[in-house]
Length: 329
Image 1 (cartoon, rainbow, N blue to C red):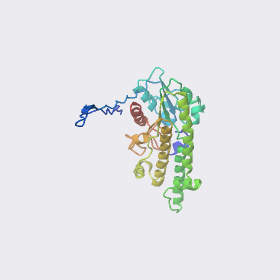
Image 2: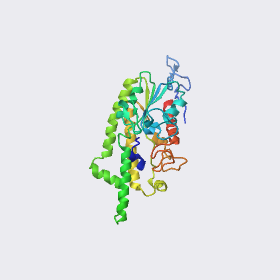
Image 3: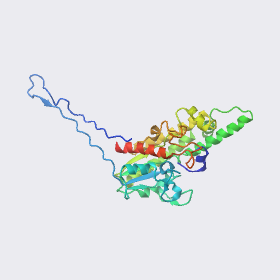
Image 4: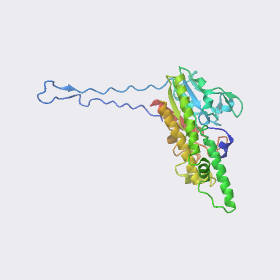
């Protein structure tokens, strides 16, 4: 997702199983007196396994794909903050894709518009339109984008701000709200959910992107990679990590918004004939409130050198395993 200041505020593989449905007994006797005799039972043809793509592989996406601040950082422009051990690189290595058969054009801060237009990065340097890396020869594409379009990190930042303001009010005697951020968005958006509107608009743009991917690389297998879970099912378990800076009600609100985002990505992938990789399911128990030794996503105060509310190297490995599982069947 984005590297903008709001993000800093808070910010396996399995073998292919084939169902061979064939005759157990080989033949069945005809009824008594039948002139036809035994009738052979036809075996159901064994489905042909889909071969694992041999490349070329192109990776598209934002900072969750690029591997923001994960060492070593490689590639140009430097402002894209791509890691040599992000999930696309790990997938390519596992599939044996080298010698020009793997291209990573993901870039931190990217929105869907940056797939078809040039992106000026925060640290300087422009990333060419990501879709320009595609060609008719491309056979594998992963797409990890949409969070910046939906303004998810802005929502995270707004929740931090609303909870801080609510805490200040409590110091002068006001009763603390159960979910000040949820209440803010409800009042600002009226009856409709303004965050959901942004998610829906992001979905429209993603749908256009996926159609363009298909046009440029008609033979490619396309995988839309969702976002790993940021928060646990029980918000109370975040208290040791986040303290009381964000209410349990608002932690639940943020979890709902991420679920909406991933649900949109899944719908758009299915509509486009692509495969959705559910990184949230794979990351269960590895959210930013989990222990440092097991978490895939860093909390608002991350480990030294890492990006707040972004995947760490362990998270990239976990997502790579989920992608490989999908690719290999």
